Length: 270
Image (cartoon, rainbow, N blue to C red):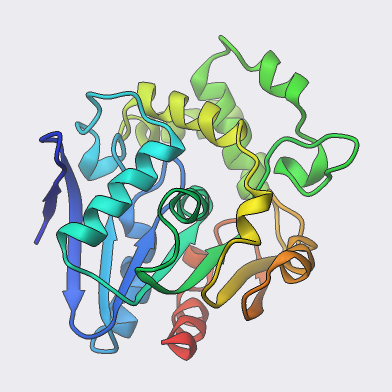
């Protein structure tokens, strides 16, 4: 299968590999299902892996006829689970994909899930006087979000990418921006913008305590966008069985940086 049709008629790009217990793997903002291609290739035969592109992204770029929010993506996920007749799902979310998982739990509960794996994501991106585990390691505030309104999307994307992979900051802007422009062209800009606002506006800290299936948190060290201290926060605020896995020498892109280790740690959970 290379697509899944939503009830509204829009089609999402979707790949369905293998058989057995279902594992749904969700990518991050401005990314695609390809972040999981190598781990799935390593793990083929171990389970049924379902990877797809969120609306407005890559193979689902044209699935953009409706305004997109994090709740929208959670609804899309619910349609996939129900449409494919899945149960006991291992739900894996990286970055924004983790936010989708949190919204799914908030709106639909955990009855269709076996376990959840969150990968390098905070439940609340906006930092304030009481919360310092948000975006850019506690430095991104509501004032920063306000200042971003109306700014050049490419410049903002460059800031995000360099934050995710700091070594890219050593590349001169005139060389980096054309490459980033090509990556951005794979996505619908309206969808990216609406999702960015939706994601940054959310506070899902209370959702973590509502998770009733085992929760695992994968995180890189030293990390980049988010603090590794989130692992301990999740441990302290999760009522369900919890485990965390550290990926040394990693940035926010640790899945692409260490696909073998990611596959190995995921296999332990299956």
